[in-house]
Length: 199
Image (tube, rainbow, N blue to C red; front, side, top):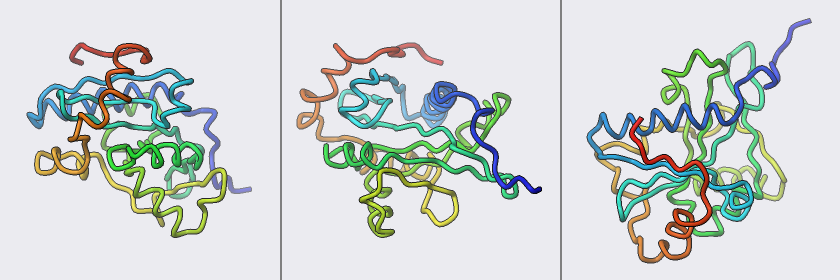
């Protein structure tokens, strides 16, 4: 009997993907001379309220957020991943008004030894764009939706974050309208595992 998919029990834990991709995001920004970037994570309780699980601060006026999704399964014929999106969590991001600078990271690698290709093998999708695609497919009333790399408009990190557009729509620019409510509150009180060192 042909096995068409592989469940994710053998895949690295989500924390591995978070660490791997965060490492590469920091390196990418340094190599592209975009300056230092400071990642921070928040607690699971706070994640339920905010919708994302990692933030990345570039300077006093620019930051963005990422929600990581471990592959739910691997299609064995195409070696492509399937990710499960919690639509309630996505709506939390969109309704908070941070969907334009929040991203879903969808890693498509399954082994610890693929660490060095982590960013190259990860898709990114803007939260607002993802929600629009879900609504167009008339799936917004579901609890979850499965995303594959075919049939969905997925991008790579550099498509959003290049020198050309790094200070465009991908980042918060009007910091004064968001800082007091989210950013500094998280930095001072709620996050865990804040990384201030260079990788």
